[in-house]
Length: 360
Image: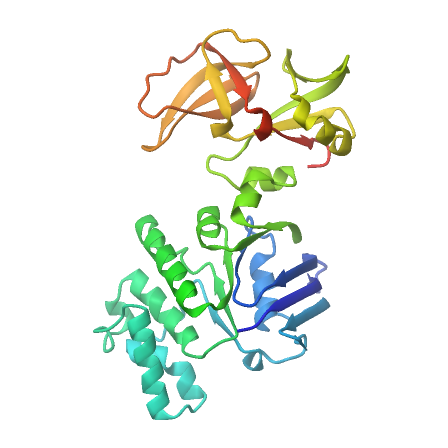
């Protein structure tokens, strides 16, 4: 396996569109890292530059210690699994898995051994003679993965490989991918717009937006310590709540003014305000599970009106109107929560995030 280093990588097309802008990313040997972001953020373009399917228009790509900008795709030691699977419909499962080995003119005995290894690893034994049309979506996905793995790639690239599967099968395949990575210890770059896939699969997540890298960290750090409003709002389901307002200093306290109400901010975030909040227009960010909610008037709480209940089985959420803003608060599942009443929200002091509304 190999490490990768992307050093100020950029991609600019002839029409002037800047798809990727000065991206810096170090990927460790054996690491599973996900590139995540909305459609058009540059994640698949980045993957294709690593694969050699797109020219790099700026910066340097290192695979291991070797500068790889001008290395042909076939010589990079990289295998890629596409969203569409790209299986040959007229070939059997074993022929599809062994196609790359055939092109490389690998010895027949070694080729058979590798195909059998992949069939066993991916639970495809007994399906060797079937064609893609006779397989389920998950089986076709595993065949595409097997075709890549038998080539012993130094780096495995996966471009939204589960997006064509139904929800239940996607969850199963996430487990399969985690199991395969644990067994092979491959270096994997995984592109997805599905944050649940990224959170469950990855050692680290790299979040992109408009061609720029927003944050790189472990799933836990990304969730608990998002470094800007975009990351905070992108990760989490339901996403983080944002309440717009302004900050003023009254005596020794910072007070958050929102929709005619006032909330005195806890002392533990005063330093954050001094360092990050340059202007007065701010947003407070609080995840749905980080509010205490009360029907009784409470000192120093954010006041709103309960609106609707969302039931998701393991969790229930009440939507709360704060002026024209609607936020989501987790409540006890199965509880009967009154609607169209005043409610009082108390954010957990160590779970409040604050961002400059003008910047983020």
